[in-house]
Length: 368
Image (cartoon, rainbow, N blue to C red):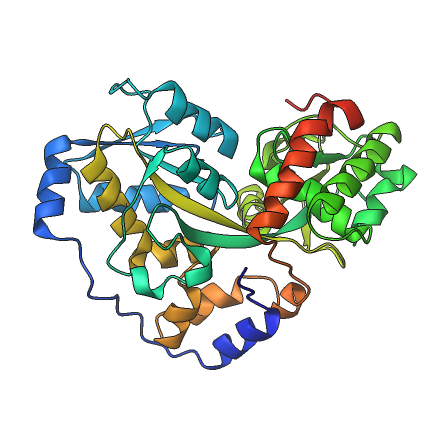
Protein backbone atom coordinates (compact mmCIF):
# COMPACT_ATOMS: atom_id res chain seq x y z
CA UNK A 1 0.00 0.00 0.00
CA UNK A 2 1.20 3.51 -0.69
CA UNK A 3 2.47 5.65 2.16
CA UNK A 4 2.02 9.41 2.59
CA UNK A 5 4.33 10.40 5.42
CA UNK A 6 4.42 13.59 7.43
CA UNK A 7 7.77 14.34 5.82
CA UNK A 8 6.22 14.10 2.38
CA UNK A 9 3.46 16.47 3.44
CA UNK A 10 6.01 18.95 4.75
CA UNK A 11 8.00 18.85 1.52
CA UNK A 12 4.78 19.29 -0.42
CA UNK A 13 3.82 22.32 1.62
CA UNK A 14 7.27 23.83 1.22
CA UNK A 15 7.05 23.59 -2.55
CA UNK A 16 3.52 24.97 -2.71
CA UNK A 17 2.69 27.61 -5.26
CA UNK A 18 -0.24 30.01 -5.03
CA UNK A 19 -2.22 29.41 -8.18
CA UNK A 20 -5.52 27.53 -7.86
CA UNK A 21 -6.50 27.12 -11.52
CA UNK A 22 -8.42 23.90 -12.04
CA UNK A 23 -7.47 21.05 -14.37
CA UNK A 24 -8.88 21.41 -17.85
CA UNK A 25 -10.19 17.83 -17.96
CA UNK A 26 -13.95 18.08 -18.28
CA UNK A 27 -16.61 15.42 -18.73
CA UNK A 28 -17.74 14.98 -22.31
CA UNK A 29 -20.81 16.77 -23.59
CA UNK A 30 -22.32 13.35 -24.35
CA UNK A 31 -21.92 12.22 -20.73
CA UNK A 32 -23.38 15.43 -19.37
CA UNK A 33 -26.38 15.15 -21.70
CA UNK A 34 -26.97 11.51 -20.82
CA UNK A 35 -26.76 12.25 -17.08
CA UNK A 36 -29.18 15.16 -17.39
CA UNK A 37 -31.59 12.90 -19.28
CA UNK A 38 -31.53 10.44 -16.36
CA UNK A 39 -32.28 13.36 -14.04
CA UNK A 40 -31.26 11.75 -10.75
CA UNK A 41 -28.28 10.53 -8.75
CA UNK A 42 -28.76 8.31 -5.70
CA UNK A 43 -26.01 8.42 -3.10
CA UNK A 44 -25.75 6.59 0.23
CA UNK A 45 -23.88 7.08 3.49
CA UNK A 46 -22.71 10.65 2.83
CA UNK A 47 -23.32 12.78 5.94
CA UNK A 48 -22.80 16.45 5.13
CA UNK A 49 -20.28 16.91 7.95
CA UNK A 50 -18.12 14.00 6.71
CA UNK A 51 -15.15 15.12 4.63
CA UNK A 52 -16.92 18.28 3.53
CA UNK A 53 -19.59 16.32 1.64
CA UNK A 54 -22.18 19.02 2.23
CA UNK A 55 -20.22 21.41 0.02
CA UNK A 56 -19.26 18.67 -2.43
CA UNK A 57 -22.92 17.79 -3.00
CA UNK A 58 -23.96 21.44 -3.17
CA UNK A 59 -21.30 22.12 -5.83
CA UNK A 60 -22.57 19.21 -7.93
CA UNK A 61 -26.14 20.49 -7.68
CA UNK A 62 -25.02 23.96 -8.69
CA UNK A 63 -23.20 22.64 -11.75
CA UNK A 64 -26.01 20.30 -12.78
CA UNK A 65 -29.35 21.64 -11.46
CA UNK A 66 -31.18 19.29 -13.84
CA UNK A 67 -30.02 16.32 -11.73
CA UNK A 68 -31.79 15.65 -8.43
CA UNK A 69 -29.53 14.21 -5.74
CA UNK A 70 -31.35 11.55 -3.73
CA UNK A 71 -29.44 10.94 -0.47
CA UNK A 72 -30.00 7.61 1.26
CA UNK A 73 -29.19 6.82 4.92
CA UNK A 74 -26.38 9.33 5.64
CA UNK A 75 -25.29 7.41 8.76
CA UNK A 76 -24.87 4.01 7.08
CA UNK A 77 -21.55 2.15 7.28
CA UNK A 78 -19.57 0.60 4.43
CA UNK A 79 -21.15 -2.81 5.00
CA UNK A 80 -24.61 -1.26 4.82
CA UNK A 81 -23.76 0.29 1.45
CA UNK A 82 -22.78 -3.09 0.02
CA UNK A 83 -25.95 -4.66 1.39
CA UNK A 84 -28.01 -1.86 -0.21
CA UNK A 85 -26.63 -2.80 -3.63
CA UNK A 86 -27.36 -6.49 -3.04
CA UNK A 87 -30.89 -5.80 -1.80
CA UNK A 88 -31.74 -3.62 -4.79
CA UNK A 89 -30.29 -5.57 -7.72
CA UNK A 90 -33.69 -5.73 -9.40
CA UNK A 91 -34.95 -2.41 -8.08
CA UNK A 92 -34.64 0.73 -10.21
CA UNK A 93 -36.46 2.87 -7.63
CA UNK A 94 -35.18 5.47 -5.15
CA UNK A 95 -33.76 2.90 -2.71
CA UNK A 96 -31.15 1.63 -5.17
CA UNK A 97 -27.79 3.43 -4.77
CA UNK A 98 -25.92 4.50 -7.88
CA UNK A 99 -22.61 5.10 -6.14
CA UNK A 100 -20.83 4.04 -2.97
CA UNK A 101 -18.03 5.47 -0.81
CA UNK A 102 -16.58 2.61 1.26
CA UNK A 103 -13.48 1.53 3.15
CA UNK A 104 -10.61 0.24 1.03
CA UNK A 105 -11.15 -3.45 1.78
CA UNK A 106 -14.76 -3.27 0.57
CA UNK A 107 -13.70 -2.31 -2.98
CA UNK A 108 -11.99 -5.57 -4.03
CA UNK A 109 -14.68 -7.60 -2.27
CA UNK A 110 -17.44 -5.77 -4.16
CA UNK A 111 -15.60 -6.36 -7.42
CA UNK A 112 -15.24 -10.07 -6.66
CA UNK A 113 -18.98 -10.25 -5.99
CA UNK A 114 -19.79 -8.46 -9.28
CA UNK A 115 -21.50 -5.62 -7.44
CA UNK A 116 -19.67 -2.70 -9.11
CA UNK A 117 -18.85 -1.61 -12.65
CA UNK A 118 -15.66 -0.07 -14.08
CA UNK A 119 -15.21 3.58 -14.95
CA UNK A 120 -12.08 5.71 -15.33
CA UNK A 121 -12.39 9.45 -14.73
CA UNK A 122 -10.59 12.03 -16.84
CA UNK A 123 -7.97 12.54 -14.10
CA UNK A 124 -7.38 8.78 -13.75
CA UNK A 125 -3.63 8.94 -14.37
CA UNK A 126 -3.08 11.25 -11.37
CA UNK A 127 -4.60 8.73 -8.92
CA UNK A 128 -1.74 6.66 -7.41
CA UNK A 129 -1.64 3.18 -8.94
CA UNK A 130 -1.57 1.58 -5.49
CA UNK A 131 -4.87 3.25 -4.62
CA UNK A 132 -7.01 2.04 -7.51
CA UNK A 133 -8.12 -1.09 -9.31
CA UNK A 134 -6.22 -1.35 -12.59
CA UNK A 135 -9.45 -2.06 -14.45
CA UNK A 136 -11.31 0.88 -12.94
CA UNK A 137 -13.75 -0.96 -10.69
CA UNK A 138 -12.82 1.05 -7.57
CA UNK A 139 -10.51 3.98 -6.86
CA UNK A 140 -9.26 5.76 -3.76
CA UNK A 141 -10.88 9.09 -3.00
CA UNK A 142 -9.40 10.44 0.26
CA UNK A 143 -7.63 9.38 3.42
CA UNK A 144 -7.16 10.42 7.05
CA UNK A 145 -5.86 9.05 10.35
CA UNK A 146 -7.70 7.95 13.46
CA UNK A 147 -7.76 10.48 16.28
CA UNK A 148 -9.38 11.27 19.62
CA UNK A 149 -11.81 14.16 20.02
CA UNK A 150 -12.05 15.18 23.68
CA UNK A 151 -14.65 17.27 25.54
CA UNK A 152 -12.38 19.42 27.71
CA UNK A 153 -15.24 20.53 29.94
CA UNK A 154 -15.62 16.93 31.13
CA UNK A 155 -12.12 15.47 30.67
CA UNK A 156 -9.46 17.19 32.78
CA UNK A 157 -6.46 15.18 31.52
CA UNK A 158 -6.59 14.73 27.76
CA UNK A 159 -5.47 11.20 26.73
CA UNK A 160 -2.47 11.14 24.42
CA UNK A 161 -2.35 7.46 23.48
CA UNK A 162 -4.52 4.35 23.28
CA UNK A 163 -3.26 2.91 26.56
CA UNK A 164 -4.41 6.07 28.37
CA UNK A 165 -8.03 5.23 27.55
CA UNK A 166 -7.91 2.36 30.05
CA UNK A 167 -7.36 4.68 33.02
CA UNK A 168 -10.16 4.79 35.65
CA UNK A 169 -10.60 8.53 35.14
CA UNK A 170 -12.18 7.80 31.72
CA UNK A 171 -15.10 5.76 33.06
CA UNK A 172 -18.15 5.87 30.75
CA UNK A 173 -16.30 8.17 28.39
CA UNK A 174 -14.88 6.40 25.32
CA UNK A 175 -16.87 5.72 22.14
CA UNK A 176 -16.29 4.65 18.57
CA UNK A 177 -17.95 6.55 15.72
CA UNK A 178 -19.58 3.42 14.31
CA UNK A 179 -20.49 -0.20 14.90
CA UNK A 180 -17.33 -2.34 14.48
CA UNK A 181 -19.43 -5.13 13.04
CA UNK A 182 -20.29 -3.02 9.97
CA UNK A 183 -18.48 0.34 9.95
CA UNK A 184 -15.04 0.56 8.35
CA UNK A 185 -14.20 3.53 10.55
CA UNK A 186 -14.93 1.56 13.71
CA UNK A 187 -13.11 -1.52 12.40
CA UNK A 188 -10.02 0.59 11.80
CA UNK A 189 -10.34 2.01 15.32
CA UNK A 190 -10.18 -1.48 16.79
CA UNK A 191 -7.28 -2.34 14.47
CA UNK A 192 -5.34 0.77 15.52
CA UNK A 193 -5.73 -0.14 19.18
CA UNK A 194 -4.28 -3.56 18.37
CA UNK A 195 -1.26 -2.07 16.61
CA UNK A 196 -0.70 0.24 19.58
CA UNK A 197 -0.45 -2.86 21.79
CA UNK A 198 2.48 -3.98 19.65
CA UNK A 199 0.67 -6.62 17.60
CA UNK A 200 1.80 -7.49 14.09
CA UNK A 201 -0.21 -6.14 11.17
CA UNK A 202 -3.22 -8.07 9.90
CA UNK A 203 -5.21 -10.63 11.87
CA UNK A 204 -2.97 -10.34 14.94
CA UNK A 205 -3.66 -6.62 15.26
CA UNK A 206 -7.39 -7.26 14.80
CA UNK A 207 -7.37 -9.82 17.61
CA UNK A 208 -5.25 -7.59 19.85
CA UNK A 209 -7.67 -4.74 19.20
CA UNK A 210 -10.56 -6.92 20.28
CA UNK A 211 -8.72 -7.72 23.52
CA UNK A 212 -8.12 -4.00 24.08
CA UNK A 213 -11.81 -3.19 23.69
CA UNK A 214 -12.74 -6.17 25.86
CA UNK A 215 -10.57 -4.65 28.58
CA UNK A 216 -11.96 -1.17 27.92
CA UNK A 217 -15.51 -2.49 28.17
CA UNK A 218 -14.82 -4.53 31.32
CA UNK A 219 -13.31 -1.43 32.94
CA UNK A 220 -16.54 0.45 32.31
CA UNK A 221 -14.82 2.99 30.08
CA UNK A 222 -16.39 1.97 26.76
CA UNK A 223 -19.73 3.50 25.82
CA UNK A 224 -21.61 1.27 23.30
CA UNK A 225 -23.07 4.22 21.41
CA UNK A 226 -22.23 5.38 17.88
CA UNK A 227 -20.51 8.58 18.88
CA UNK A 228 -20.92 11.94 17.15
CA UNK A 229 -19.94 15.52 17.98
CA UNK A 230 -23.45 15.97 19.39
CA UNK A 231 -23.10 13.06 21.82
CA UNK A 232 -19.66 14.37 22.80
CA UNK A 233 -21.08 17.83 23.50
CA UNK A 234 -23.98 16.36 25.50
CA UNK A 235 -21.55 14.39 27.67
CA UNK A 236 -22.74 10.97 26.55
CA UNK A 237 -19.42 10.19 24.81
CA UNK A 238 -16.78 12.67 26.10
CA UNK A 239 -13.97 10.93 24.18
CA UNK A 240 -14.71 10.08 20.55
CA UNK A 241 -12.50 7.86 18.34
CA UNK A 242 -12.95 9.11 14.81
CA UNK A 243 -11.10 9.97 11.60
CA UNK A 244 -9.17 13.21 11.97
CA UNK A 245 -11.28 14.93 9.32
CA UNK A 246 -14.52 14.09 11.11
CA UNK A 247 -13.17 15.28 14.45
CA UNK A 248 -11.79 18.49 12.95
CA UNK A 249 -15.08 19.31 11.24
CA UNK A 250 -16.91 18.40 14.45
CA UNK A 251 -14.70 20.83 16.35
CA UNK A 252 -15.69 23.56 13.90
CA UNK A 253 -19.37 22.71 14.23
CA UNK A 254 -19.24 22.91 18.03
CA UNK A 255 -17.36 26.23 17.77
CA UNK A 256 -15.93 26.08 21.28
CA UNK A 257 -19.11 24.91 23.00
CA UNK A 258 -17.78 22.80 24.60
CA UNK A 259 -14.04 23.38 24.12
CA UNK A 260 -12.44 20.36 22.47
CA UNK A 261 -9.00 18.99 21.70
CA UNK A 262 -8.11 16.76 18.75
CA UNK A 263 -5.34 14.26 19.47
CA UNK A 264 -3.52 12.03 17.03
CA UNK A 265 -2.29 9.24 19.34
CA UNK A 266 1.40 8.68 19.94
CA UNK A 267 1.14 5.07 18.71
CA UNK A 268 -1.20 3.05 16.55
CA UNK A 269 -1.63 5.85 14.02
CA UNK A 270 -3.68 4.13 11.32
CA UNK A 271 -4.40 5.90 8.06
CA UNK A 272 -7.48 4.83 6.17
CA UNK A 273 -8.19 5.16 2.49
CA UNK A 274 -11.78 5.21 1.29
CA UNK A 275 -12.77 4.30 -2.25
CA UNK A 276 -15.48 5.20 -4.73
CA UNK A 277 -17.32 2.83 -7.02
CA UNK A 278 -20.41 2.71 -9.22
CA UNK A 279 -23.00 0.04 -8.58
CA UNK A 280 -23.22 -2.63 -11.28
CA UNK A 281 -27.00 -2.18 -10.97
CA UNK A 282 -27.02 1.64 -10.91
CA UNK A 283 -30.39 2.99 -12.11
CA UNK A 284 -28.59 6.17 -13.24
CA UNK A 285 -25.17 5.03 -14.53
CA UNK A 286 -24.42 8.21 -16.48
CA UNK A 287 -25.24 10.46 -13.54
CA UNK A 288 -22.98 8.19 -11.48
CA UNK A 289 -20.10 8.70 -13.93
CA UNK A 290 -20.68 12.46 -13.95
CA UNK A 291 -20.58 12.42 -10.13
CA UNK A 292 -17.20 10.67 -10.28
CA UNK A 293 -15.90 13.30 -12.70
CA UNK A 294 -16.98 15.94 -10.21
CA UNK A 295 -15.29 14.21 -7.28
CA UNK A 296 -11.97 13.70 -9.07
CA UNK A 297 -11.77 17.15 -10.63
CA UNK A 298 -9.48 19.69 -8.98
CA UNK A 299 -12.55 21.41 -7.57
CA UNK A 300 -13.96 18.26 -5.98
CA UNK A 301 -10.61 17.21 -4.57
CA UNK A 302 -10.02 20.62 -2.97
CA UNK A 303 -13.51 20.59 -1.45
CA UNK A 304 -12.55 17.35 0.31
CA UNK A 305 -9.35 18.98 1.54
CA UNK A 306 -11.41 21.90 2.81
CA UNK A 307 -13.35 19.26 4.76
CA UNK A 308 -10.02 18.15 6.33
CA UNK A 309 -9.61 15.02 4.18
CA UNK A 310 -6.43 14.44 2.22
CA UNK A 311 -7.75 13.88 -1.33
CA UNK A 312 -6.22 10.99 -3.23
CA UNK A 313 -4.80 13.38 -5.86
CA UNK A 314 -3.18 15.49 -3.13
CA UNK A 315 0.40 15.02 -4.32
CA UNK A 316 -0.55 15.83 -7.90
CA UNK A 317 -2.42 18.95 -6.83
CA UNK A 318 0.51 20.16 -4.73
CA UNK A 319 3.00 19.40 -7.50
CA UNK A 320 1.00 21.59 -9.86
CA UNK A 321 0.50 24.42 -7.35
CA UNK A 322 -3.25 23.92 -6.97
CA UNK A 323 -3.59 23.82 -3.16
CA UNK A 324 -4.18 27.10 -1.29
CA UNK A 325 -1.90 27.45 1.75
CA UNK A 326 -4.82 28.16 4.09
CA UNK A 327 -6.19 24.66 3.47
CA UNK A 328 -2.88 23.12 4.52
CA UNK A 329 -2.62 25.41 7.55
CA UNK A 330 -6.01 24.19 8.85
CA UNK A 331 -4.71 20.60 9.26
CA UNK A 332 -2.77 19.23 12.24
CA UNK A 333 1.03 19.65 12.00
CA UNK A 334 2.64 17.36 9.45
CA UNK A 335 4.74 15.79 12.22
CA UNK A 336 1.58 14.28 13.71
CA UNK A 337 1.32 12.06 10.63
CA UNK A 338 4.89 10.78 10.65
CA UNK A 339 3.98 7.46 12.31
CA UNK A 340 0.98 6.88 10.05
CA UNK A 341 0.62 3.29 8.80
CA UNK A 342 -1.40 2.44 5.69
CA UNK A 343 -2.53 -1.19 6.08
CA UNK A 344 -2.30 -3.36 2.98
CA UNK A 345 -5.43 -4.85 1.48
CA UNK A 346 -4.47 -8.26 2.84
CA UNK A 347 -3.89 -6.85 6.32
CA UNK A 348 -7.22 -5.06 6.23
CA UNK A 349 -9.10 -8.12 5.06
CA UNK A 350 -7.55 -10.31 7.75
CA UNK A 351 -8.23 -7.76 10.49
CA UNK A 352 -11.75 -7.07 9.29
CA UNK A 353 -12.59 -10.78 9.38
CA UNK A 354 -11.26 -11.14 12.91
CA UNK A 355 -13.01 -8.03 14.22
CA UNK A 356 -16.43 -8.39 12.60
CA UNK A 357 -16.54 -12.14 13.27
CA UNK A 358 -15.56 -12.02 16.94
CA UNK A 359 -16.67 -8.63 18.31
CA UNK A 360 -19.81 -10.07 19.90
CA UNK A 361 -18.08 -13.06 21.47
CA UNK A 362 -14.94 -11.24 22.65
CA UNK A 363 -16.12 -7.74 23.55
CA UNK A 364 -19.84 -8.37 23.95
CA UNK A 365 -20.91 -4.73 23.57
CA UNK A 366 -23.86 -4.04 21.28
CA UNK A 367 -22.91 -0.73 19.67
CA UNK A 368 -25.91 1.17 18.33
